[in-house]
Image 1 (spheres, rainbow, N blue to C red):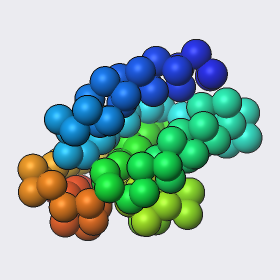
Image 2 (image 1 turned 180 degrees about the horizontal axis):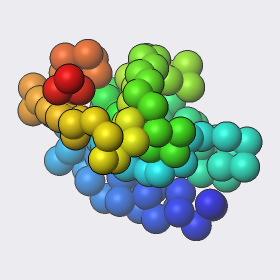
Image 3 (image 1 turned 30 degrees about the vertical axis):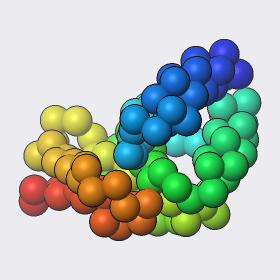
Length: 114
């Protein structure tokens, strides 16, 4: 997991730190659990160090039921959306605004299309 974070960090350093990215969406299968700490603990520190300037969304499957958490990992600029089982329900529609507003509520929206 540490290698996956290092790769993600390189991408974020290249695009986020250089101010050419207004928001970040991270796609993953895993629901964050202790076994994933090597990825999520440094990710939390990284996002916190950005001082809420960039909104983040973590989009995952794993448990295969819809779930939504705002202020994920205690971060004001982070949300987590968990999608439902692939073929039973309609796809999740996610929109990302280019407003540049650090508030994720104004940047990300999702529609379960039920």
